[in-house]
Length: 122
Image (cartoon, rainbow, N blue to C red; front, side, top):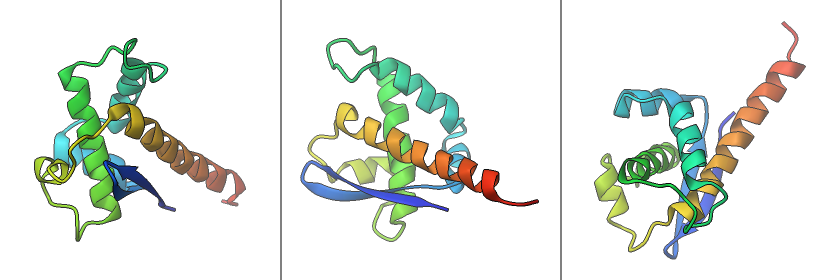
């Protein structure tokens, strides 16, 4: 079951979607493992304190790619097929604001998947 969340970024309501398709879409598009990348981002951002974080340019690109895939998954008709074009609509796009929301959404998706497996009878 897919979960959708709307996050206001730079005054624009943006939909993001998490489902079992996201890791595949991310892997096909970027050739990377979304689980490893999310773990790396969580470590880099730390507790969300901008002054204490350990973010580099590569981490920011990972974040932008994950956000793009989840946004495109939520609204494929209105989200361009290119992350750069999608990001152009925003003046600012704070990893400290958006990443915790995306991690929360992803966690709820994984949790609902585990709960379904526990209650299903095989």
